[in-house]
Image (cartoon, rainbow, N blue to C red; front, side, top):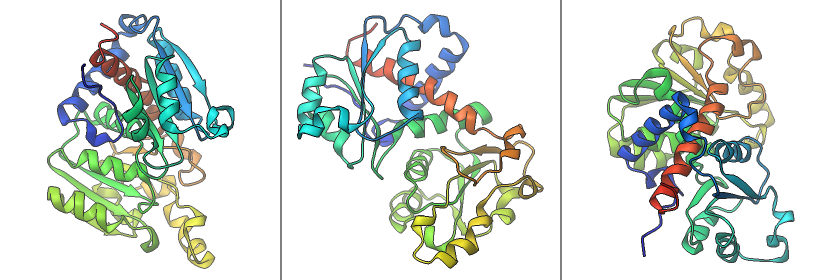
Length: 311
């Protein structure tokens, strides 16, 4: 029997596969009518054991636009998990009803357990603080559509670099492309973990700078990836109050930025990007949301084709 392909971690995909998904998403954007019936008669099960708005709706919109249908639940309370059913059993049961599964779970590793037990492809839609590979794909598609490439640029990550799973995944994915340089902008308390620096950046020989200065870094950046500095991550309220405004992006802080800078954010934002920036042509975060739908369409199609379920 054919080995099923799942997507649990962005590193499950080779660079060629990522480039292929980007190409496929670009074609979907250019010719949506060609894809509108590709998944007719197929069902996506969205198993969301924790609340999500953008990711769940993005998967659902992706499947509907491919002509397929969606079944599933949006919180653990409305599933048999509330009766104590294991993730493994849920995956086996749902495989009887659906052609592909997208799962979000608060426990790290739950989608991997589902993939080991399902008889259909499983996509990790976020597992705790672990992985969120489709957000990374949305980020990569956005960078590629804005810059026309994924290599030879300076990328700044700003905010909570310690706990941000989107940052860790994107750094891991980009580290496989050449000519990249990273500027890591954060409070001391929220610096990028040393294991990411050791296992990813140093291993790949990628130059990086760590700084607390957002404005001073601005002239060098091709991409600025903002994240939220969360009050609950600080032991000391005074430290939080002292630092929180340093990482709020305002039009003044963009004075020395490149004219073709791309400003990204995985969303939801609270106050770390001023709403005044929404009108700036360099703001890409709502484009990221739309790109998320298109890359998920490309991914669903790829996995169903590999499973022999669609042409």
